[in-house]
Image (cartoon, protein in one colour):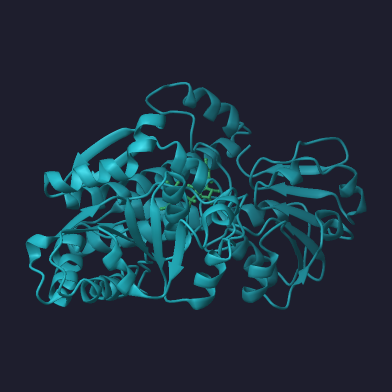
Length: 430
Ligand code: UGA
């Protein structure tokens, strides 16, 4: 099929490369000329395992990037995968997606073939029907509303495993308002449906929009709940990971997202929960459980630092911060728990020495003045404490490196380091 995708960010590029891999001919539109050039020469514009290999294979050929919206006319389906950022009050900013929808409409001006616009971006219920569809149709001019169909197809990919998640989804959600869109979406995903046998859920546009928020709110709240239980467990010297192992055996709970510690970051959980909370308040509903999930998450870094304070006075001392990315396998630092940890160290007058295998360059934009080490070993040298912030595998094999510390205090926020003789070790929830 000939498919266009608007947006070459994290979602758009992954979708474009994976749909090319399913055998489709893809036109990927973005306003950023550098990103377009990078895709066409076979370089993925973002750091994501396995994505580079796909972009190298299809970029410039079966996956063609362009800044030219007119190329949409060569396709019958357009996926909208542009950012939907938060406004300062947490509510959703739909201006980018509405502008993109208008550009799609202008490109389709005068065309009378049916065209399906599929919303991949995360938007609140009603946005596709009430804002995106009108933005397209008001710009198409002679094309009537019946010739433009819309669907909502939320994505559940995780950063760091987006390609693998795409190829083995638990579910595909098709928010539709007519049978034609289901057939189109089934055709897009046909190779995946036959290969991976995901649950295919057909639902309304608004339900599909809401499912995405509910999914992320559920997972983030699950982590906050295990963190709250973990904080209480720690007070009783109870190991929250042993508790979680038992909890996870109950099929009603499942073993996933029960890793307690420093909490959740990234672009998605914080943004989506803030948008859902703001939307609930707008409807005069008090989302007290979601508020609590955020409050627990916000508190974890300070609890973590207080454990450090109990063992060592850090003013004027080097403290190793191991891990800057919001989770392993990515260079993304957005809402990383490393940020409040570094702020807490600076407010204590400490000298943070940061190390991350992928995210140091990005963190330098936020904290240009702190010291960055080239390895964990270098960060540990002369430090009075080591703070484990991200669960990168390479931190699990640190051993003799701790011997170079001025004081061997290890505060582990992710259950990565094995406690052992010679270390003053504290786990956040164990
Ligand atoms: C999340 C969702 O998992 C995806 O399904 C969704 O598509 C994506 O948001 C999105 O909306 O785009 P992602 O943000 O990439 O994916 O990362 P996750 O693997 O979900 O982790 C989120 C945060 O929770 C990380 O900071 C991680 O360290 C933390 N976490 C996760 C825990 O603290 N404990 C756990 O047990 C699991």
